[in-house]
Image: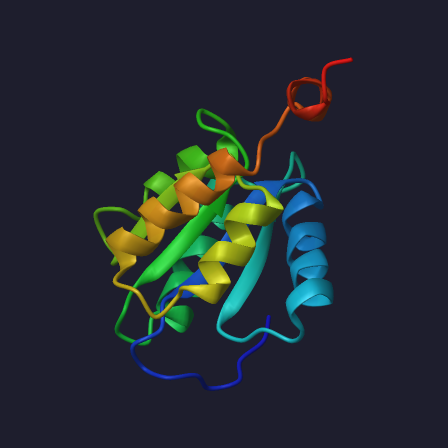
Length: 145
């Protein structure tokens, strides 16, 4: 977790996913964007008790909320990382967006000065737009002979 100070009006970001997926996504994002601050990854697997994971999410949300809230990006709706993250909706200024992918994360980090709700919507849209069936798209763009 990077703890460097960034402007107070910036949304903190947590990536929560099964096994090492969250950590890998954050490392990959830093490879693309460079070092990032006020963010963390939380891995969820069978080795952790649910209450322990909720406590880690709670601690991270408290640490990362500098006044603008925290965006929690999770791997899939209905999965344990999402379900545990939803527990924070009533106790913290957080928003949860599921289906995390690199386009979503990159958009979130590049626009994290936006208000939390707007950032969540933008991240969700970027995630959807990042899903492309490449073969079908290329067939449509290929010139007809």
